Image (tube, rainbow, N blue to C red; front, side, top):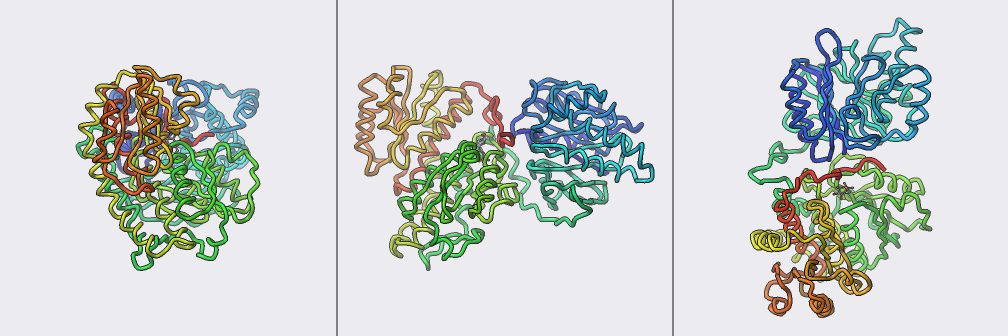
Length: 621
Ligand code: G6P
């Protein structure tokens, strides 16, 4: 959701900006633009609606060799996806160009004040307010304070302006009269700075920097940065210069290539044996028959005092949180609640000091999840993050947590991050269980089964061709039901979400037995039901639910364990997956469901990696 890039140095800025914006496409956007400085110190702004490819065409028709520039991909919030609403926006009669991620909550009152001060607005965006506000502050300072340097005056104007903003922002700004500096500021919306040799890069996440530099600075909230080719200065909004840590960016450049796959989503689906191994790496101890975590920052004594766990998350991560609920309650015997972050942040549930909070998030930037975590932290609870993106806002704000190490996930629909979340939760359940009543013997057995999961997932991936054939049969259906019970109920929800996200088919996930109380009314010859029903204690019950659907002429696709001949007699189509322990089934059963939605979406001609209206990382409320 919205992306920012910036460059200053000896390269042609536009080349980095376009490449950087391409790498941010996965976040979701509907328009894009760049601003560079011309030799005569005027702003050169190019914008387009739609894909980066059309922006690249616009730029190619009037290229600039400027070595300074900023770029943006916009996911519409205030105003439609139009050229005039696309960023960068210009403030104060071409004085500055600004790209903005986030939402300014008090934009309406600022806008009317700026209008009455004579500023003319060309867009409906909240961002243009920030552009004019900075221009206004700068004009006032120029009038009253002529002996300050241009850079210092710009920094002070930015600080004065952002103190008036309510909401969230990551800002990249260039000034027409300052050809050797880019300015950046953030509050609640991430920005990273890449440090090169005589060049600096700016971006809203690390992806655009990969292959350009492996030295990275994470800007913190309320910090303002000034980037020139050979220097970087960071200061706090309310004080002076602050030190900045240059960290090592640990991403292989080939992790963002398609490597022969047609889509990032398919590549990421097939990466799962490896991403799961990475989530498990170094975290299983046969000797102690438990899992080991380096970053929880809680002692076993602290954890023994935990009487209740609350998982909070959005979207797919909320589904893994539900898997976590089944896991922790059964294996560690700790009561668990799962809360949508968007609800938790405004609820006031009674929670005593023995409640531990876990925010689950791929990106670590989801606005609602971040807000819920902060609210729980404010109340004094220990907050943990289960997160994929290292150094993300949630990872930084939490008191401790578990990194997934699943690698960058580019496809908007989450796949490998989901299974890694489920794996991290299995390990957490083992760890918490072994602190309580889980025996050494049971711990060893669990480890044995867990170690086998990547191979089972590799086997489940071999169903891809068979799933494609099933996809061809059902691709034109407009409604799907996904049904499962116990550990496979969250899987049914996730399967339905995957299908609707990328193929725009209406799909509902339900606990298989609950479908009698409403969804069964939808069943007819054109509404397939996907039953997630590997072997387990609940198999017979699910089979009865399946029969109920068949009795109403509903087509059934079953996800079943290898060797299950019985299901083949009643279901129209069966996808066989390897058998495993029930608590590990959500990881294995997710695979054919991911493949089914992928193949259906491709057959329907949908843009799988960038589905309409969706964003990879939802940084607005
Ligand atoms: C968006 C994405 C989903 C994701 C959700 C939560 O809606 O499209 O794929 O599950 O945000 O994101 P998070 O990064 O917090 O897991």
